[in-house]
Amino acid sequence: MIGTLRISLGALRHNAAVLRDLVGPRRAAFVVKGNAYGHGLVPVARAVEPFAARLCVYAAEEAVELRAAGVAAPVLILGPIPSAALDDALAADAEIALWSVGEFARRLCAAARKRQRSAAVHVKVNTDLNRLGFEAHELVDALEDVLRMPELAVAGIFSHLASAEELDSPYTMHQLAAFERALAQAKPLLERRSLKPAAHIAASAAALLWPQTRLDMARLGIALYGLMPSQRTREALAAAVELQPALSYRSQLVVARRIAAGASVGYGGSFHAPHDMRIGVVPAGYADGVPRALSNRGAFAVDGALCPIVGRVAMNMTQIDLSAAPDARAGSAVTLIGRDGSASISVDDWASWAETINYEIVTRLPRDLPREYVDEER
Image 1 (tube, rainbow, N blue to C red):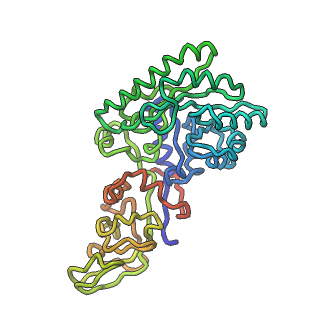
Image 2: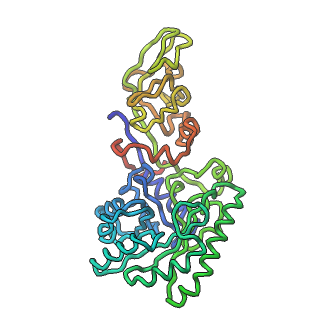
Image 3: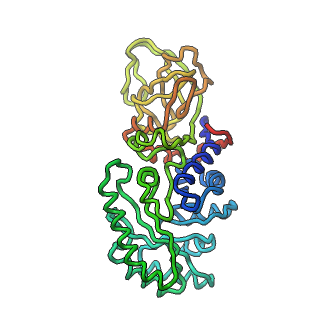
C-alpha cells in the first residue's frame, strides 16, 4: 500500500495537557473509541494515559486490547456489551455503562459473581437525546434497583448532550438542567449509602464552550486529536484553546501523464480536460479513506501546490490535475492531509468537500493503512 498516516504523539500529548488544564486534572477522560478516531487505539492511549483520569472506549474488545498492551488507566466502556464478552470486560477491570436493570444487569451480576468481584457501573440517564439511558425521572428508582444488586458498584452517573457545539444552545441548558435535577433527586439516596459517583455529561464541545457542564468529569474525544467539534466552535475558541491536529496523510504519484483537450478522466467520464494537461494518479481511493464525495471537488498537494481532484475517486486510485506542479513525476510526494510548503489540506477541508463532519473522516480511515508515530509536535 503506497500511503502512510503520520500521527504526532507530541501533538496528542500537547492536546491532552491543554484539555486537562482546561477542565481540571481529575476531570479529563479521553475518548479513544473508533480506533482512537482513526489515529490508532494503543499508541494514542499510551501517549495520553499520563494526563487521563479515565480512558473511554465503546466496546469490550477495545478495553481488552488496552489491557493487553499494558495500559493501566481506568477504562470506561460506553457501548453495549454482548453477554459473551462480559467476562472479558470484567477481566480487563473495565467500568461498564448501564441503562437497564433487566436481563443485561442480571447477566453482569452473574459474571461478577463468577469472578468473585463487583462490577463498576456508570448509570446512564436520558436527557432527551433519546438513545440510551433511564429517563431522568426514573433515576432514583433505577439506582435503588442497582443498589439491591450487591455485585454492582455505582462509579458514575452520566448523560450525553445533543447540541453542545452550538454557541447559543437552549437545548444544552435544558439537558443540563434535567440531568442536575435527576442528580439532586438521587443525592439523598446516594448520601445514605455514602456514595459519590462521578457525574458527567460533557463531551468535547460542551467542555470547551460550556464550563458549567464539566461537572466531575468531561469526556474529551474529537478535541484530543486537534480537531474542533464544529466550525462555529473553532471560530469561538480560535485564540483561547490552541490544539494541534495530530494526523497527516501522505502518498506518492504512481503515474504522471499528458492528456489531450476533451479527454475524459476516470469512471463515468465525469471530467473532460478543458485543454491539454497533465494529470497524476495517486494510489489511494475510497478503500483507503478518501471519500468518493471528493470527486471533482477536493484537492491534494504536490510540490507545495494544491492540485484539484479530477474525475471520480475510485476504490484505490484518485486522479489530480498537475497544472500547478509542472515538475511532478512518478514518485513525487503527495500530501492528502497536512502541509506541503504553503499548501495545506485539513481534515476539515475533506469534511467540507464531502459535506460531512471531521469525526467521520478520521474514524473511517482504514485500520490497515500504515501508521507512523512520531514524537515531535506538528
